[in-house]
Image (cartoon, rainbow, N blue to C red; front, side, top):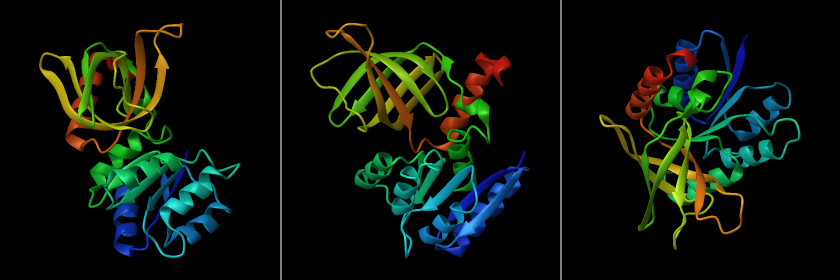
Length: 240
């Protein structure tokens, strides 16, 4: 089955890089190009896309404006959206998360970086990478000048669910965090950046002493994702 992707960027060299990179890595893909958000908007009213890859800063209509239009559209609001941008400041990342972005890739980037983002964002392109795996292990989450420790419940290449004891200072939804994991004695991961996307009590009463945090990974480098992928394949070969 063919999948359709739309790349929107005012720089022709970026559009060419993405188009050629996707066509080399996916046999069943059709890539169409837009020079700005407005052109992409018009194309999306006529065609359905399985993925939108979009620059932030463009003339006529920005990537942020296009994203907000998509998320408010009754038929297109679930379209996977990856933002390309040179803006790495927390303010911009938070704005993109709040607007409903699925993933965020900082320029300059490689096609390998983009493929990793796609594989953890869009089930149509690689369903296996969205699966979650039950794994135990200690986890440390750092936010601002604070940190908290807990235990891993499950993990995927796109994020994790952790179990923590409630403390005086806790992160909140959309807080940027950094994660350290120890999945085995020789398999540790440090400084994995992410955001809090869900918080829930771990016990069915209001004064629960424990809390669950769902974390979405952002800007995890290709080497780290590759190591994690190989480790999960080794533990769960029947699921790959």
